[in-house]
Amino acid sequence: MTVAAVILSATSEAALADTQGQPRVRRLADIAWSGGALPVVVVAPDPDGAVARALLGSEAVHEGPAPADAGPVGQMAHGADRARAEVLDTTAVLIWPARMVWVGPETITSLIEAHGVDDATLLRPSWRGEPGWPALLPSVHLDALRVIGPDVMPDAIVASLSERLPTRTVELGDPGVTHDADTPLGQLPPYEGPPDPPGGHTHEWGQDVAAAAGLSEAD
Image 1: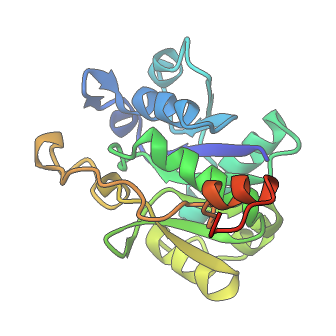
Image 2: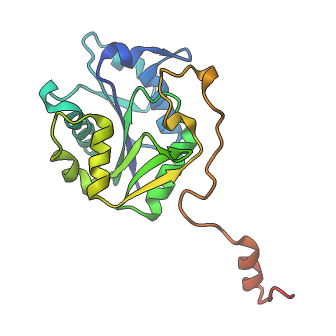
Image 3: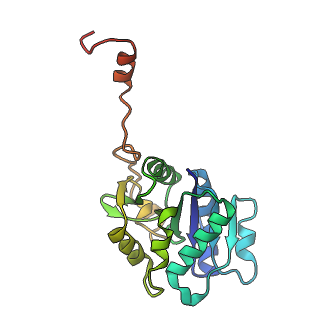
């Protein structure tokens, strides 16, 4: 499984906003790569090359935005196309608004793990039952993304996809999936971690060892 991260910023100013001492998109690119996403594509305007410079030394590539009249959905599809051009066998893309700066790398790893056992399902991370970002969209469903109108906003785009595609919400205990850059880091609720294995499988190690040894529970 190859899962790309498509980080989306509507302006270069937002892309470069200081976040814990780093430009926002550089922080997100490093988190995405650390969590196991590859390729990492940053879609943002870059009139003076500052966004591209911020990504130097990272695993991310910069991609200019689609035409403005393509709307948010056009930017998402544009980023997905660049990701698939980078790695042809990309099986899914993480659609990641750049304002979601507090997502942890463990969350990215968990979403990729969940995709590995359920590769045709749209996955949304949640915190205390509230769906958030980034959304993991399997590549087989990119055509469903492209038919959404350019006037639809990001939250409504994912809601529309959820109505038409197999969808699963994965509780990951990460407040960063629902709290964006408007929440200072010091006011972020604590990370709790997933209550269940994201892949939906629990290893019964004791039972496996007993079975391999030919022992019953009584033994």
